[in-house]
Amino acid sequence: MSTIPFNQPFAVGKEFEYIRQAIKNVHTCGDGPFTKKCHTLLEQTLGVSKALLTTSCTHALEMTALLLNLQPGDEVIFPSFTFVSTVNAFVLRGVYPVFCDIRPDTLNLDENKLEQLITPRTKVIVPVHYAGIGCEMDAIMELAGKYGIAVVEDNAHGLFGKYKGKYLGTIGCLATQSFHETKNFNCGEGGALLINDPQYIERAEVIREKGTNRSRFYRGQVDKYTWVDVGSSYLPSDMLAAYLYAQLEVQEQIQAKRQEIWEYYHKNIQDWAEKHGIRFPIVPDHCEQAYHMFYLLMPSLEKRQALIAHLKAQNIISAFHYLPLHLSEMGQKFGGKEGDCPVTEDVSDRLVRLPFYNDLTEADLARVVAAICEFD
Image (cartoon, helix red, strand yellow):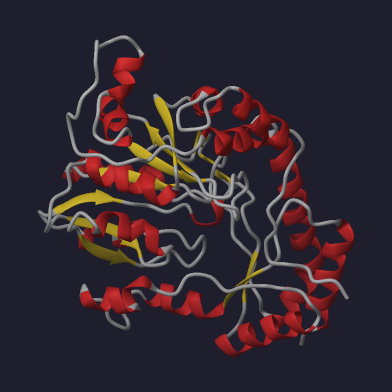
């Protein structure tokens, strides 16, 4: 019996043709023609002031920490239920992470628990749009405005998802995207910085170009370029951008396929789930999800582990997700302890993600569903 993996990178058709074009362009390093095509597509589709491809979402997050001039001792609020990169990008600048619990419905940062975590040292709030379902951004932005705090959206899961009609990643002053192989749109490794506040554009270009004003030089704004600020090499190869552009230009096709997969699971597992007290993802009416994943919330850790083992025995690979960052070895060094984020601690033990990638066939899906429905 063939294995159904948890994830499988996919190509939609023109990826390799575009990579060949990138090579023929004799510009395979960063900011070549395909990188610029990706920038333009993201800017025009999302309506953001500037989009800049990066080598990863992690690096885009690192850029936000530099752009916001974070200093050792500054505090940034994160959900504990997120990938380590969200926090590490800021801890690298000496930031003290403050962990917030998540909502029991969407598993997003709980906006009702934010204000009690704010201190005079709080500089940034980083909401993570889990599973591509929008955080309650109105409440978060209102609170951030009240205290003069910046908001950086970690939108690794949510490209083209919406909150109250606004694209995720277009609400905070800055936002980050991921194009890792597990994401809806991928180029193996990659990311993007979305800039919604134009005051950050010029410095972002400098930071991304190793701290030089090279971008201004290529636009003819200066007659030579030089070292003007801190920075690093955050530019992806134009060959990666070529692969990515082939996917971004057929975004509707990709999203439609992912919607079909999500809805197949939802429809065909529903009776079994209700019978066994198992919960599906919750998508509020005012959110348009990005169809990034489909997960089940099992009644207990034991049931979660048993289901994963049951599926594996039938060559179907499922996965749990984040462990609570506040209880990790590093999290405890920053004062995290058991009981700080009870919803995170509970959900982390019970969540299982089902196979989800664009090349899943209906036969694959039927096999996954049949295996799940055999589990008691």
